[in-house]
Image (cartoon, rainbow over all chains, first blue to last red; front, side):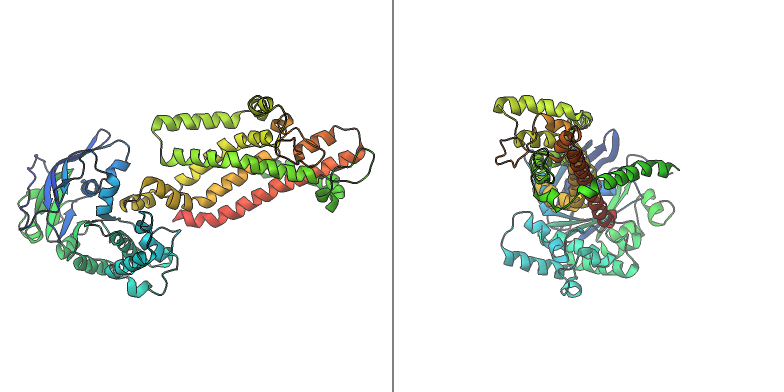
Length: 268
Length: 263
């Protein structure tokens, strides 16, 4: 195991415009376990940012801090500052539910609600957040399914159970479900790791489409995937942000030895 | 061998009840009131309806409190409060049924100055609460957390997640728990002795004493009349068939449920 000095987290100058997320000195504990240590970085808007690192390095923990999912875990503690377009997400009086409406999330294992149809799955976020107008819901459903590149495949079985779709379709259904409430950001936690290469390719294609409108942050174990789709890449190791730079630099000229070891497959 | 030891009592009970009770079990049993002593025939229609009424009243008390308690334990609640609720539910489920009768006697019968269907229903409802709490909690715990996370990530308020997603996914299991609780209390006699009291006629108002199958069986079984004994056997047969039907219904439902939750 390589020796670890407290490597200063490298903040990236946001490419021209204001960052979507500005994370400063983020620390997360689960009970006494200090799993994320002093992470600072800026996520540029309308681009794909990849988070890589070995298992247990804190990349999912980082992602979940961005939409306040840790609020749901008893014993979890988050310190530091995260702003979304300048607004402090952890400020007193900020409703975590509203944060999650702005920051959508797609999980590693596709999890469409098994008690609902395809259409109901897409519209659930709208309906349970108080949208009543049927025509608006209908419209948003079609729009979300089109954005998730799923409309043509499911338009004839909108009323079928969501579990009747294939694995890749289910994951795209989850993306459509997240998109339907019109979030400002999309977090993806290894969205393709459970899918076959063909379905993975579809998801990646979709991500490239979506980045025109959305800021996307994707956690991935697959370095080729990070190289293919992301503009910036952050490498995490043992709870610390080791290096954060443009993706091609991370993969061709990493500054840190640990990054180099990881991307060349010498450990991990 | 062990299986035989377990199954034998059930087989014996069923066999004996059918032998002794089936002959008295005719349509009159379900349609007629009890006849006065000495007159042949008659039935237990009032007791059958009474038992169902009491179960219904019990459900009005036991289902909402039980389901809410289970939801609290599984979805809300701090660790300390959960411990307290669980502990209370365990103690309640171990409370002898006669104690419920006394409690309700003191709480309802004395203030209302009379035995009533309300009192009987309340006693049964109290007994249903701990059973429903525990099964509801267990069924909700079977819902994979990934679905809760997905719902939270959509910014849906917690109570709507519970109502529209988690409870719906656990729905059949929760109903199973309710049916099991009903089957469990349907045969209770002790809590009804001095609450519902029993009644040889139709119960016109719920504030009056009401008949119940177990009570009627009890009264008939200790009577000196052969005819009443036969009716008591028939009543016992009906009661056990009711419990059996509920249990079989539960089995059928849970079988359909398994693959759904397994995902």
